[in-house]
Image (cartoon, rainbow, N blue to C red; front, side, top):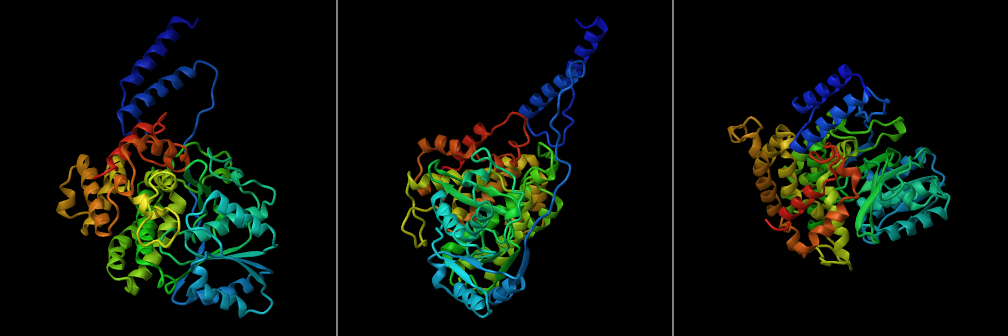
Amino acid sequence: MAPAATRSTIFRLINASQHSACPCHGCRSATHNHVHQGALALNQLRKFATPVQTIEKEYAFEVAASNLRFGEGVTREVGMDLKNMKARKVGVFTDPIVAKLKPMRVALESLESQEDLPFEVYDQVLAEPTEESWRKAIAWARQHDFSHFLAVGGGSVIDTAKAANLFTVYKDADLMDFVNAPVGKGLPISQTLRPLIAVPTTAGTGSETTGAAIFDVTSRAFKTGIANRALKPVLGVVDTANTESCPTAVHISAGLDVLFHSLESYTAIPYTERTPRPANPILRPAYQGSNPVADIFSLWALRTTVKYLPRIANDHGDHEARSQMLLAASFAGIGFGNAGVHLCHGMSYPISGLNKKGPKYKHPGYVVDHPIIPHGVSVALTGPAVFQFTAPSSPDRHREALAVFNGVTVTDPSITSIPDSEVGAYLFESIASFLDGLGVPRGLKAVGYNKSDISMLVEGTLPQRRVLDLAPNIGNVAGEDGREHLTRIMEASFEY
């Protein structure tokens, strides 16, 4: 038994810890305060016992993004790019719709203009790809000895090309080896992948700048993916002519993805709050938490999207708006590709995945033969409720977002007069009003879900730790998996 003096010291430490203010940056809830103080007391007690390994917070962030080329008609340069890279054989990926459109025609003409540049085309990429569609694309790529890859299409095409590239290099690996944990094994990518050039034909995913690739695990009725810097294209060719043929409904859904990429990455927990600190730099995740570099890109993309997306909805032929949205998509990609997204995206994965077996909602304007809640729409459905929930974590950032939606500066009296405690409620209304103007379905009920489905949607969200761990009031609260909060957010998103 410890001497009386030592026991007295221990009890004083416990008592002090229970009556002191939480010293950590970002303490945002009574639950967190209680848990943190308990952990503090326990750590102080452990000083008198066997030392234990503590989980340290992150202290650094990395910036990684593809090279970007932006301009009218730059697709015609990809053949020269691949020739300059000394490509031996190129695997070209697209989908059945884009295969018939001008961007693909221009890309093929560019390849054909170069001497001794063989290529093969895979034009069966599935919109909103599944585990099965990825496996088919990977099997096709493994049959060829491609030295380089070219993707012409939306995020589904670019993501599928990333997967094909990865598993061409890792010929014996299984798909789930690199899928984000806990759904997959989340193994690090240590080998150098083949160069990939991405030519986006939608202004949305920002996949041309990131190391993220998303697919639908149909057996589990939610989406997940692989997020690793090694996946990012070497070059994103952002051609302002390539969204001319994009239907208005696709423009809007893609633009919603840009909107929430920006909002989520700007409001993610700071990179210094992410735990644990990686034991090796190769283990540092692509999604690191908000940081000064990502903030610049995310905030610019948010302002640009709020300004120009409604213009595209009103006039599909608005060339300036379409060009600016393409640039915003790439900027948002740089933002979230380094900071990460959080709740809207985490909850969108079961919302879109369960639709195939549940509501079977088919979004107007999408020419597909299967049920679909487009990715941008599935993300937007919870948007108002999410940012009401996250607002207390960083009122100033949410106040800045509110000013953007309201078309005023952050110093405008209409913004500065709002108490911190009410910023979330105001932001809820402003986001909802913006979505109404774009014709977005008003909540989960509007796409066919019932209240009885909420628990199932929450269960499908919980495995999305890659993004949930960046969510304010969840990812930085000890012992919090988010179930209670997610349930309340889903309920507030049912109809509003």
